[in-house]
Image (tube, rainbow, N blue to C red; front, side, top):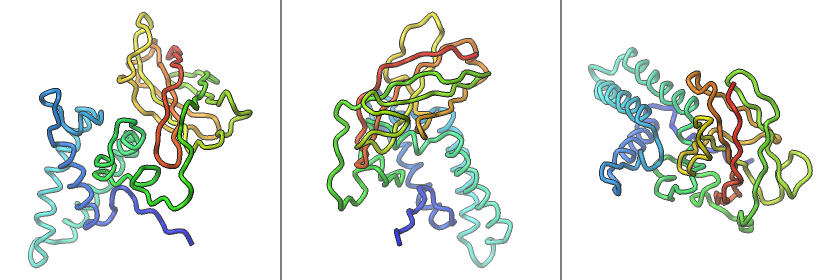
Length: 241
């Protein structure tokens, strides 16, 4: 039986404390240039996300101080509050894809993966089989299958492979998005943010209300089983209705 993969964010109080403290302390470490940059900003964790994590960290530290005193302050309410914070962080990651964005960041390092417990598909994974084929020049073609209110359904295919399936040597197809005014040209590569993986050739991308009438630009990158990420595909842009 295959060994069950541990979650990136521990669900027990003890495991969560280790995982959350390691992650939060890491993203706050300065790493210029430029001056003022931290590991978090380098990894494109937004200011709003860092502010939210800081608020959670402050509340967590207060609760865990009570939790650690088993004799007098570790009450059922304290345990419940700690578990609510664990759920809050898990929900934040599920909605914002923070960990997946780092896992799919071609500039992320082994140290970054370690701080976020990102093992599968990275150099941290214990690979015992034959080394995966390097991404090389493999690419994808992105087309618009359906456009609805604040939603794009994209069809992502390989020019060297028939159908919607992934071509040989491709484990995942990662999609990134950048939004710009329709009068602006193709955005710079560093402005694209990970939005999800392709499933059976399709990916559904939703947009914020304030982006209606703008253009969403997309690129795709393939990823092999070693976590190596290929070059970006040709960008394509579609109006957000």
